[in-house]
Length: 149
Image 1 (tube, rainbow, N blue to C red):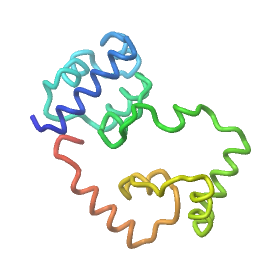
Image 2 (cartoon, rainbow, N blue to C red):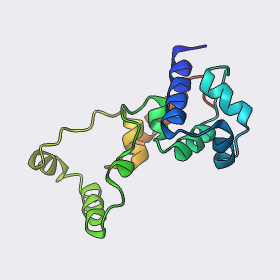
Image 3 (spheres, rainbow, N blue to C red):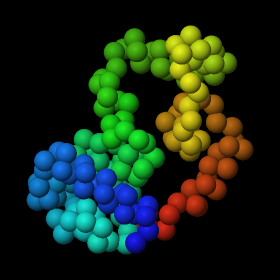
């Protein structure tokens, strides 16, 4: 088993333990057979489909990106801050729609530019993504590990 897959399995087990949910309860919540969940959590598998990672993440209250190892924190931004107010949503949308002002806003708020991989930034819809960048991102998708379906 690859180190990456073992790390994913460990994070799935951590999420299950933190939620204090049984495999049976998780199976009911996700529709994933109990035996498959046990294999994922114990590392007795060769592949874990992405849709199942998403279902496990939702049911255990963590982000799928954390399970995959793409984020250091188990909770995504929305899970951390809760529902945005209407004003906050407008601010976020305005920020996204005006890439020219983003550096000034970042500086004003003392926020460092994102260090995330481009594919995550593009997936979240933050900022302009050129057609060339989209082509590069599609090429990067082909480099996903073999164990991810």
